Image 1 (tube, rainbow, N blue to C red):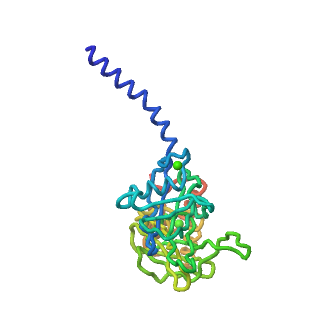
Image 2 (cartoon, rainbow, N blue to C red):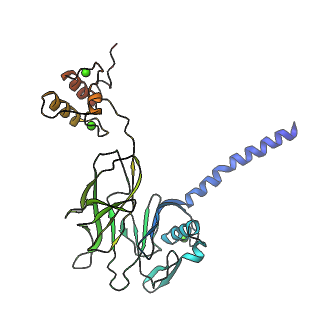
Image 3 (cartoon, rainbow, N blue to C red):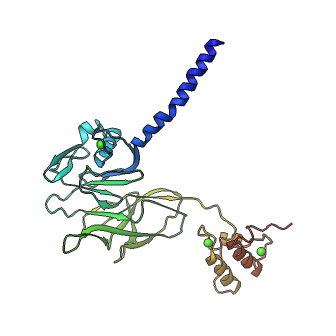
Length: 303
Ligand SMILES: [Ca+2]
Ligand SMILES: [Ca+2]
Ligand SMILES: [Ca+2]
């Protein structure tokens, strides 16, 4: 019995010691890392990396993130694939993904240019590092879509804007639209092309996980990495236009249908009949409206 007790005590000591090790979690942050290699291929695509102070300089920096990203993903680890060095110009990359090109790399945190790999990195940051492919004119343009990723439904338009990091006439960094870029989905070119504002509306016919990117005939783009998750839509009562939300647009769509202006088809007919009486009328429209101000919840099932 005594043995058992001391065992339990030892266990309790272990448990009570746990908050101490939990404190150590403050010494790491979780970031997403994208790396493009010398051929312009995204060899890491928003890869989750837990960053610790692996270079022991007392700070969590881009350098730590890149060492760990290589250790975990590059054959031979950071020792084989990554090098950084401090010079009069700052602390920069010397080798990335096994390629040493004289220091021609670009690095961005949350789509903003970084000054060097000694820049701090914080929880949920997005680190994007690329190798220049044009070593004569450095024409490579860092590009990005708004945000980090998106979720949508099959055949529901997804709005994207593609921008690149450029400079104005005074060499101040500015964000400019990428015009005429062809959108790729999982590396395949599509018919979607960005307009003069960098804007494009894309759709996915099927559910699945996709990487959206872009290529251009006229610019050297650092290919953006933009994961899109296309989920199956299971339908919601009140969602007349079947876009995943119940809002005033659904009330208007139903009214248009009842007036014979624009006829609803498909699943919308089912989700518009919110009292499930197989009749579409003003009562359904009124009940959707009421649901928007939380007077009723849908569907309304007859007693
Ligand atoms: Ca460090
Ligand atoms: Ca809707
Ligand atoms: Ca009805």
